[in-house]
Image (cartoon, rainbow, N blue to C red):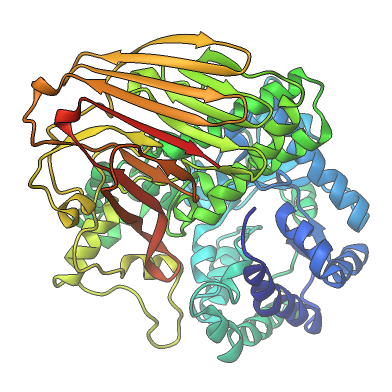
Length: 629
């Protein structure tokens, strides 16, 4: 959701279409195929003939179509009713568009939680694909994983296919002969099944793969090499459904919460991620990639919601609106918008941009605005006290048919969301500048580390090779606090803009994380919230909202508490242009809020929003900000 048209166009042109054309030319079938809901919707509008060609292959029995959540959510992150609904949407689309009755499911990002089994079975799923690592961390031996298994939850069963990690790293990055040799080794060991399922973008979408797969002829050689194995009777292609019928089961397995190895490392907090990388280095390549590697684990996917408050805020708003939609009979426009807002990419960050890409986050906030606008129609201005983000602290949720705002008294009475429904934007959708583990590793790399990326000889670099080779000349800035609409601080008079921009200073006072005791006065046409904090300096904050979303925030303090030369300077962080008035001062500091994050190209600097800081003399004792669209 939210990806650019030119990205879809490029991948259809350079990846999806040529890949299937080569398979058709060599009659390299059957294969299993998952195509995400957002991609299906884009193709229906822009390239329906491509979908028609898939339908022809499916009708001929060449394609085994796989289910998933339609809008590519991480199923474990959804309310149970939403998981089942997402799969039902995909089943309905595949049956109507391609005339197939799918039984298998591609598990988005292979994020598994044990309770999923019951929901998948209830959704009519017969088998699901997970990584072999999911088994290895439980102590299964790798050589025992070339067969399906069964698991259950609430007495409902589903089959599990372990994906072979070695095949994922061989294809398409190593010469085809390496894959053939590995398959012969498996056969000679008495194995009956080898499962390769992976991103189609490997075949021309990832950096360097278009040249390697097509122009340098890897795919042609691979198909020829595999066809030789088929002709000799050593290997045959199979659908997963056929394999489930003919390959004996390995028995029952209960898998832990897990994802693939890299995902678990990305989900760690920076300090822990650095320690894990050092531990793997100290163990050496033999132990860190051998049988002991499964015992080295990072965090689970849900830890992204802890690591990034912006992700948790988006996730919990989605859940709140999903529940509200259910309680109001699920108006179709609201329900679909909530479903689109469940698309996984903007909730996490690894080697790809994900959460760090503003256009992906804003697309999900836009869908939430569409949903809430439909659900708030005909309401009056209102305020609720609820722990929306599930952290144990109560928030204030202000909403009307035109806007929605979320404030947290325990965190400085910060305005953490301010969404206007008509433009469909959350003005506080600004990502905080954080330290990531790869920042320090990239600086160390630039200061003499061995470069790990690039292709040498008869192989291509994987995305993880590129990830290991990123370099950075200096550490990027890290914000003092998690960003919200307005963070009030008192700054030293001698502080300059450059030092302020890099957040290399200590404020004389900051209320960013101070608890406030709020008093609320709610009227039909306006809501007023008055909060008071006693430390570090007594401050009274008055926030006013009108029913059309007009906002005003007033500050009052005792100017005798600090040096009169100090500067009262509330920082305003905006993801989108918003008119902000600041009576009593014309002095404003401004800069672009830019982050440095990993992408498939290496490291990217991305502007996340704009920082505006009006400055008043502390001796004034009062200040006011007014915003309107």
